[in-house]
Image (cartoon, rainbow, N blue to C red):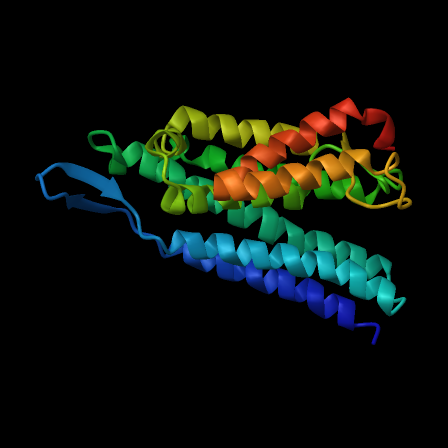
Length: 254
């Protein structure tokens, strides 16, 4: 029974590895539309990587729940969870950003021959994720509040990009997602938020009072409304709302 939570954690890692496989299978293609105009794209299989990162997030939530259910929390489980999270919410999202940067540069002349140095900043994200998780493991004060954005939240934000790109209906948003400067902004912005000491809410309930849980209720309402109105674009919007609400109620993040 004591190993059941660890099996969930390993499933998190397994799904993270699957996500990386689907990211690596996406080759950029040169095609022509009906008017003979040249454009560059890559297959929708990249969205499957997002699916597996989402599955990793589900089992990442469940492993803690199962550990408490079976009273099987352990130091080994804590370390194993962080190792799995580095892959699922650090390396896999970093690979997604790498592919988006490739797509961005491929839009320009000789873009497929771009120096790898322009693509390597994508791997700042997994480095920041590893640093953030190591910091979290040695800090016992982050029970009802976080210092910096949790790694799963950052990973899910990046995982939403392929879903927005392929299944969104706003061309202006898609153009932003293949703008290299926007992508660099995401890389360094998300990485900074992970390693920072900005006080952010942990979505745990101390009690069931309205006053004590007002920030979480605002976030939940924003998430539901966003999902209805914005679909996948709701993910980055709710992410920003999470930071705003956390700062507005920062006395409740500790």
